[in-house]
Length: 231
Image 1 (cartoon, rainbow, N blue to C red):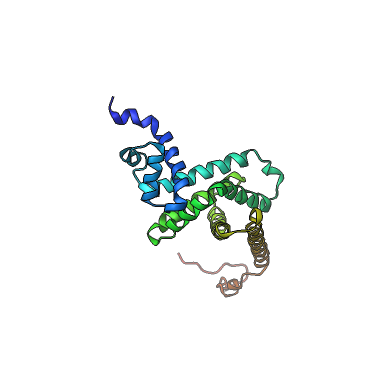
Image 2 (image 1 turned 90 degrees about the horizontal axis):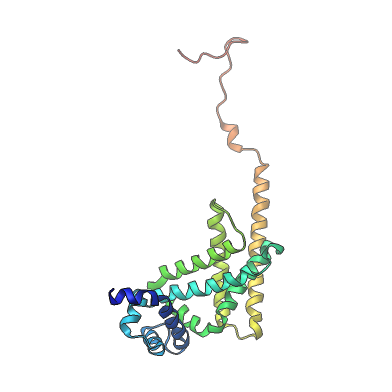
């Protein structure tokens, strides 16, 4: 058995210890290699083993952290009676639950947000946001597979991204400003959806104007005989 075979079963635990160290060091060193090296020292992990645990470096560590917090959110939501809530309430509750799961490490997430704001990391930022909003929709019961699957996630991504920016800067007690902002954004989205529904209904009742210009069959030359249609 090789050394790598012996190390493989330990990797999940090593990754979690490194993430714990990153959460402690990122507020001071940023989401940087310096913070990852410090996390390795704190965890008693050699630089070589840290590179094996996160071969993708800081980007892979960011994915692992997002997956961890998403999992914590899903666990909390699984113990909630979401079926008793209206869809608007489910979305609001789910977003709050996700932010509350990250709240103990807000300064580390502030450092991670700065890292993801780098244009070079834009694809990673988009992927992580998509994962989170997809998890949010799925856990509150969305089963859409048509175009609505994408529009719902795109809409929630806008709400999620804006709310996170408020949350990262919020100094109010118990994040009161963040929750008020979230409520307003959800109200805006619901108002837009209601307007879209009314427009679809209204347009469905309007006659097709292009039907007026469609060619009608030529009249028959003799009563009771259909027009000549060729051989």
